[in-house]
Image 1: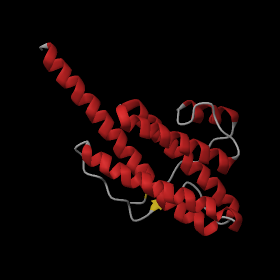
Image 2: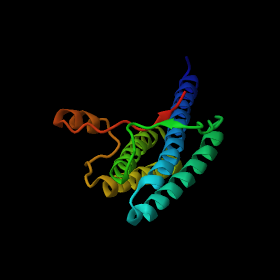
Image 3: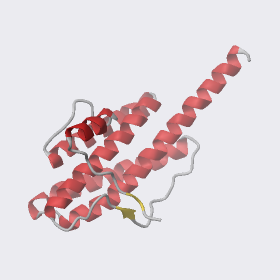
Length: 171
């Protein structure tokens, strides 16, 4: 294989990884928008403005990711009609935990997009990762040195403080 052919294959592999990471981020944003609908219905009144601000931020990121996926040659996946929540949300305390879990999940997929992307898309993904990490700390009261990395789930399991999974589409 010639050097030019190897470069084209390498570039197409990188573009495919970037598109797949953008699609994963889009799915996470769809789930976050749905999840914040649940959070908003259960959260304590004094935190409703925070929930609304997060909801609006996730809608804006979702819309931008739909454009990114299209620009990368993909077809944006529409949101599912409903998502399975990681735990029941009967009250304000559970809504607070759900908001933190949503942000941790979003941070993880943006970490993947930062690794896969370049240029402005990488900068945007890094900004989204930072914003999700900040919101996660505001909701949960604790944070990690490197948000979005797999070590988080390993150390949480080892310490007995395993975090719930993020919402997934209902079948």
